[in-house]
Length: 467
Image (cartoon, rainbow, N blue to C red; front, top):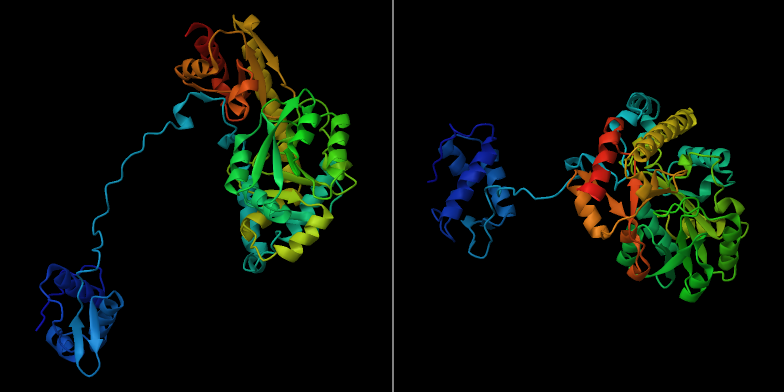
């Protein structure tokens, strides 16, 4: 008869402790394959526990394959020689050697949001209001494109600040632009040829390639995408950022924009994806009108994100589909669940609707203007300033710094890194390396702590010219 002591079972229930004891005896060989176990009633009496306790233990062991039962006969030990034993100890976790951006004194290579600039108090207040005022709505399934109040508010916001006349039904909310790119590909088709800017944001290329579509790269001239090169690619879809190109900072003039719209209208399969990622942060003059706002043929898919205006970690983006594509989405893809939680959607809705978004963007625009001006003043005060040239500093959250130096870009990055400064170069964003322009640094300044700007610039120049 099996006999176990329950004195050392700790916090485990009786049935769980008994299950583990029998299991250990089977694994150790104390109970052999085919050996019959006591009946539930007999074992319960011997151990002075309830029959239910023994029954629950036996059922768990049978569910895991350690026991089997024979009708009107009893319970027997299974043959476990073919079972792979489970690891009982957690393997030691190895530390990965990675260079985090926090290891640098200053990071000019990545856009990020400092904690001091996020409206935590307001966001926290709206979180509490959301739980109080929208408790019922939080438990309801969101429409595929996002909750209607948020889409209505975004439509109003686009009209007021971007001059765009769109219906809420045209707006699709998603957790990040990467997800929305996948939706666009399903809408337009994997048989299409997708064109992107060269140089350009490399992640976009990787997303298209990961979705198994043909992705071609179109060189740019001083006005944006080169039209002759675009025509030569035989592309169906063009992905661009005309209001502020990354990384060159080029703003596509209205004449080229109409050329692009004319190109798209020549074939019913052609569309333009307009990525308007940082349009709120034009620091000089009025915001550039969107391409979508002058599109009369329904050829522009407009995309934007709250990652730039609020925080790089808030993964809420949206796209505005032409009405024909919005109808197609409703018919073919509305089975998708919205990838942004109702809680986040209602909080963001209130943030925009109550005017907090406008106040926040105005505050951040002033903050970034001061940040940029301090950075530029520090650059101009360097003794080697005559060897650099500042370009495209009036829009977005980055500018270019051309450097007169004999070092290659790879050497520049390493030399500057020795000063604790993380930097990237324009040449890294070219697909066609033969066209890559060397000796131009990309200066992203959104995530630089203000008190570190002076030392960071000094370190950068020291790495370039003296390090």
